Length: 113
Image 1 (cartoon, helix red, strand yellow):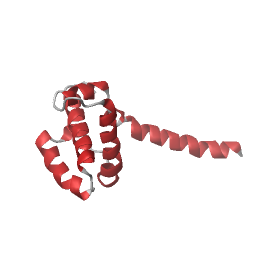
Image 2 (cartoon, helix red, strand yellow; image 1 turned 60 degrees about the vertical axis):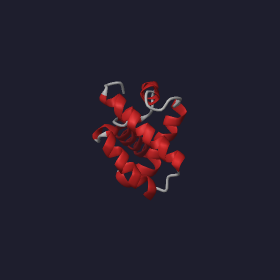
Image 3 (cartoon, helix red, strand yellow; image 1 turned 135 degrees about the horizontal axis):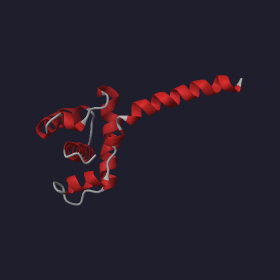
């Protein structure tokens, strides 16, 4: 009887591992902090993680996981102006998400995931 319960759990864990493995690079790192600080002095890893959390929570529900490197900086700014309003982000949340996206975009394109 125990084995019947273990199999579905193992399957679920396998699916989650496969799905999440390809997006681990989206979690902010010290390299992202360095990139962010070259544009927005004083940006912290905590702030980038907050931006990531908002991005993951509010954006991916409707749009799935988008790769920051997929669009140009100008495209992200334009998208964020529209979607930030639709997602009802306040100005602080908007800045956190935009800084996260643009910093992550820069590090991924530089090969510094």
